[in-house]
Length: 320
Image (cartoon, one colour):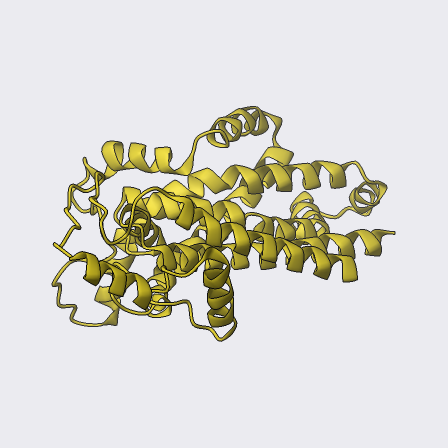
């Protein structure tokens, strides 16, 4: 247990250091940088004195060691600094955008788990289905989430009128009630959700399939059949119950994939989550915002990996 905590702390410290250094090693000055990505000219005509004042305000005029100590002290107090681009605290921007991303990730993991488990049960029951599902999932597992998003954008959203091309909600819409607003939110999340589900479903399918095939070879299933139990009860009760730990661990292991997919897919569909915030922060050299997004993302991934390790360890200990 101590080794796991030590691994978690050391990993976090290493990620925090890399997260601090990489934005500052990027070429360009956030106060004199002209964006070649969006075509926006960010040089507002600041004088040399004004630039120095801005650098001092954001503490970018200090040596790297001093910036690191100041950033660490602020982070320990829950202060992630002020955004250079948004002109307000990083924590405030993340609090506004993070629910969009977390909702998309949670929904995609839930749908992927359900669909992957159902397909795995179907494949374990029928060999013909397995011959189709296995190669299809193998191909999907190799396609990046953002590419699936682009394909859905051009092949589905652009051809179906009622599916929005971008955004998280209809601009300037006045919803009569909560149900109408919820419907609007779900329609806008449909394409990003489908792209993420298609990217993540193979992980759950392969995990559930391996668990089910392993369980099917165990003697207790032969005894259950000898007692006259129905095949449906055997598969849904025994297989799912004994594979639950592996599937729950897969959920936590898939969070890292879900975070990366969310950051990319949100930019494809202009979804108002932290993915768009990160793109704007990189384009405009917003160092505090880049640090804030990566800090929250890495912390979420590390905690989920730690929980998956605990579940796998407890499950192995129980079997032993």
